[in-house]
Length: 229
Image (cartoon, rainbow, N blue to C red):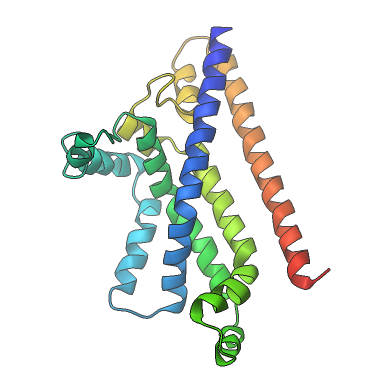
């Protein structure tokens, strides 16, 4: 059926957007989490507030701000348009919206994991002559991997469920920017579309459950590896 095809297309686009958003956001989120957890610098409180701002702003407001800045006539969007890198009303804009909305959750999970690592372990490795990058890669990173996985899953789940900022910034164009939440909303606006909405809701639940199960399995595997069992 055509409606089923539209639902699968919305799911495909949602997975595509969520995967790109997660892959692009994890390195930056880890760096910001490290800064907030281990470094003292001027403006740290401002950075922390900025990171968490999307959690308290209405998603529609975030989407509007993205449209103002990255829209075709915005200060950044106009420059990107010259290079054929438009974001507004394009799936790449949905990726940007998903990154911004999920970023606070990723940073928080990773920051808690970093703060749980005893600095004495890192200092001991440093006193043995290991450079900072080696200390991070060989001591810190293995210990915080479960936190990184948790943050990645939270960011992925947020990207899959993002609606307000996405529909404001990239609209709801079937086959181009219509993600699963947008498709569910559209189905609910059509008389008799409840069954189609239920089908897509079950899709979303299955993907979310699969992501959580995979995250738990990976976290347990990493924990066993760290414990040496």
